[in-house]
Length: 314
Image (cartoon, rainbow, N blue to C red; front, side, top):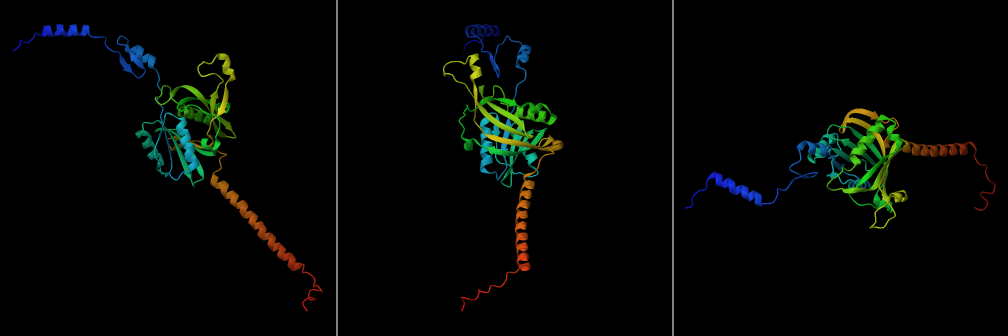
């Protein structure tokens, strides 16, 4: 049997092996490689804030095909979103959606709720503490319907632009901040591209928020870079989809809670349909009254007897 080495001899052998091997590889972090000599304080100072926004996109059952296509178009435009199965639109949908958002590790939610197969409502919420907004969606046009010439790369980060009306009133400022957090793709997201080639436009007209998506088009050859002078030649080509958001209420919590703002000019689609039915019923009542007036006129003014009425019967 061989003799056992002393502890001092084993330490000397290990030191020789460490000197012969290559240098240690630096530690890998989310923001790059970290050298061993760097201080932790300097590393923490360089990290700063990291946006980890994730959006859950889902819809209610019995949604129509046009509204489902609109939801899928938004899923394609938001690389930081997660799509989930349909949810039953009941009174307890708030607790169900908050639980789904927590299971999916998301911080926001876009819920498309369809009523009577005609009306589309959009819930935009920050989970789990709020706030949340309920919109009525009008003027829906999907990418498949429009067939526009614009095109941009899937997963690229958008530039968000807002009209000046968003800074005039407090509820518009709150909506602007929520839209910025939900529709803005986080930097260095694993599914996003590190550049901008399209623009999301949010503008206010008639107390409605109108959404448009444009491609940034510039005339240049593929291999050359764009000069600063050529930036003025850039044009915007619409891609789609199009829709209009009519704010109904702003709640303090997630899918409920105290009401922070209520739109005084909002008229529900049920009231509009009932007014249209009353107008149609008024037309029918006018026809009935005209028939009765005609009968009364014929009874008051009977025709005279014709002398030659029975001449050809003989």
